[in-house]
Amino acid sequence: MSDNKQQLARIRQMERRLNRASAAVKRLEAALDKWEAAQEAIAALNGYYGSDLWKQDLADDEAGRLPADLKRGVLSEDGIWDLLNDAREVADRLKKGK
Image (cartoon, rainbow, N blue to C red):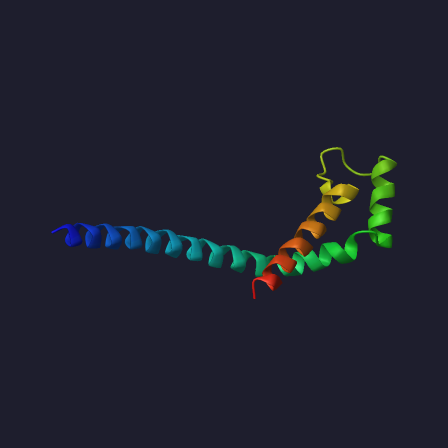
């Protein structure tokens, strides 16, 4: 009987592991789908940041030529820089996982 208790405990533990791992894999797959879909946006932001267009947009903002209610996170140096840096770190992490 004691073997049966150990067996049941083992099966229950493995079932919990299966459920946790399955859920984690599904969440990761969904996150990777979003990551892949974001690559075009990341590339566009990379090209925009520091470009002549970005500099003009920033100058116009600083001169008060843009609407006050316009969201302007893309004009902050830290906003795009931090995103691009984080994206590079994630890409490196994904490459190391292979």
